[in-house]
Image 1 (cartoon, rainbow, N blue to C red):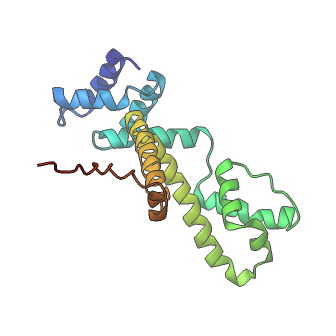
Image 2 (image 1 turned 30 degrees about the vertical axis):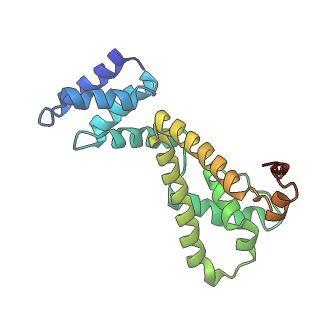
Length: 200
């Protein structure tokens, strides 16, 4: 979005929370941290914040709302619904079947936890399977939020850092030149000056 568009969004936020005024410095920070988003997405975030937040969203919260809206737009099932789908797939498809998961997040969790292993497990183990499933599913959802919260400038910095670290690792892993190899080609000894006979 452009700077004027970002200013328009901040004005809408500031109007709704007049007791939390945005200083000029904070407005600049806000604009720098949301300008990579499409204006349409920013409008949705502001509208969602006005109807769901009690306090003026900070920058991190603004970008978290973006992730929440993305998950809602793809119909990501709630954790309990995802677990129910996973459990019912045992009866619907069986151990040898290939479930048609409703969302990539459910499939990713099923692949991670092991659908076939779950089919072979004892029903008494269901509570522990449920706990593991929900833990993985919710961790994936939180990672999606973190991915959205990372600013493009930070992402570029991380890529540069990874490249620098890789170069450093290659440098320290390079084999050192053996000492014997250094002695294989000794430097030529300086020539000894010829002795001259003293005629005096």
